[in-house]
Amino acid sequence: MAGRRLGPDEEALWARVRATVRALPGRRNDPLPPAAARPPAVPKTEAVRVSAPVRPAAAAARREPGHTLDRGWDRRLAGGSVAPDRIIDLHGHTLASAHAALDSGLAQAVAGGDRVILLVTGKPPRADSERPHARGAIRAAIEDWLRLSRHAGTIAAIRNAHPRHGGAGALYIVLRRARATNF
View (cartoon, rainbow, N blue to C red):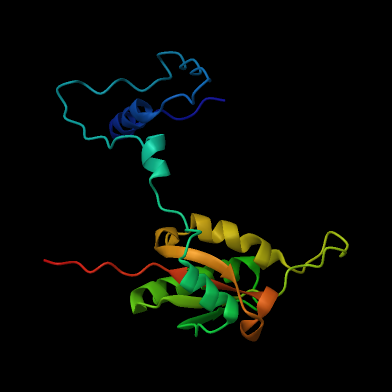
């Protein structure tokens, strides 16, 4: 199937994109299409700013939710003596609306300087329940949502909630302290 020809601006943009693409380790580059189908290379006299590709080391440096707190924090959370600064309740949401509510709630908590969030997800499905089941879909997705969230670097820990705060149907999200900036 023949496509339309690219305009000069599109050809230059396509050349810039192609210049940043590299094969995955252990994979070979696919052969390029014939020269007639390829956009021409960008002339060397033209200055083109291309951002550097993301390297694995840089991607690993992205902060994910932490798993460590000191023993005092863990003891207070396990004993239910910590009062949450904010509650995000995901009951009655679809997966899409729950994800949006979680992101919005985390953004508000970070902006408000909150430290402990009580995330009410509903109880996970019972081990003896028949699959497929509709219960527990939000709870099953929470860990991935938090790990991939734009707020992942602000999360110090995720812990199960005390029974007085919802037990198996809720989680504590402990946010990192905001760093003071001196100008």
